[in-house]
Length: 164
Image (tube, rainbow, N blue to C red; front, side):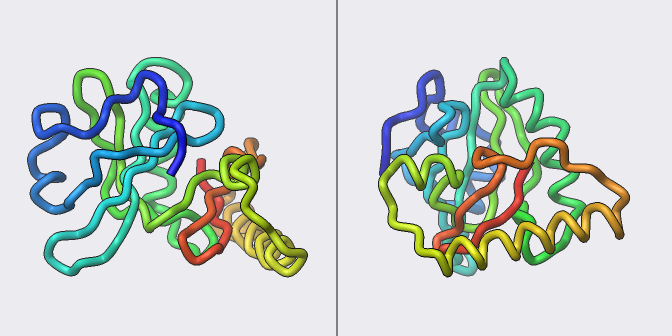
């Protein structure tokens, strides 16, 4: 799936909230987003069998600070082209983590992995991002201020979702 994220250890029962591990079966393997801050692990909801992703980053540094600010906003924003948060941000001694719908990684990591992206994929992705930004600006009176290939997540179905 990718290069292990530097500074982010695999999920361990002693490291994460027990309730999260009781709810999700989490793969011990993780792929790092290209910027090296987020590690993406496959997770499966034990009760319903839904595949999703566990995103983790070191608690210290830019990713941890951004996550504490942005994940609650993502949780409150319900829009088809905004990355849905299934479990709110949690922290242990060294790591911040939350659960989203199933993602391959950021657009940056997907492009760097050499995944082919067609003109149609780009058109659909950009249309979705415009819809997400329109909702944020008109309904929520929010300005994203960090739209780039590190804040766009690619789902397992190939859809582009705006993240933090």
